[in-house]
Image 1 (spheres, one colour):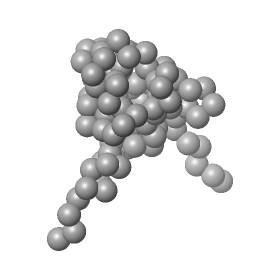
Image 2 (cartoon, one colour):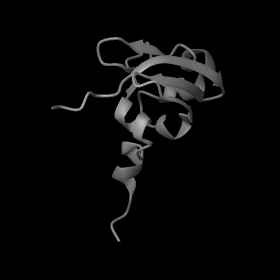
Image 3 (cartoon, rainbow, N blue to C red):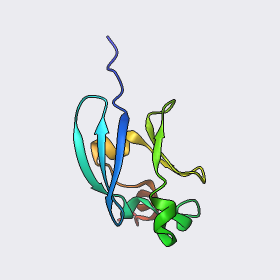
Image 4 (cartoon, one colour):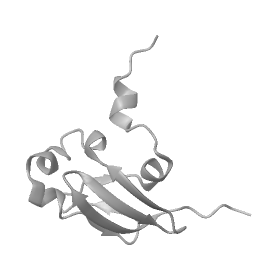
Length: 93
């Protein structure tokens, strides 16, 4: 039997870049999104608090999105994974 994907069903901006997320399995997490807001699509959100607060749920994909098309993978947020840009910038030892 396939494991059902956990997605985001509710988002609330608490302060600065911190949000409270409710996932489809009932888990609730408060997450500082600042480490995830890296790159061209996220730059306007970092500079404009009002734009950041426009975050909402994309019902189809079950993740958080902004009006400019920026989004964050719900698996990354649920599992507390390292943001992709940090993975890409790590030096190989």
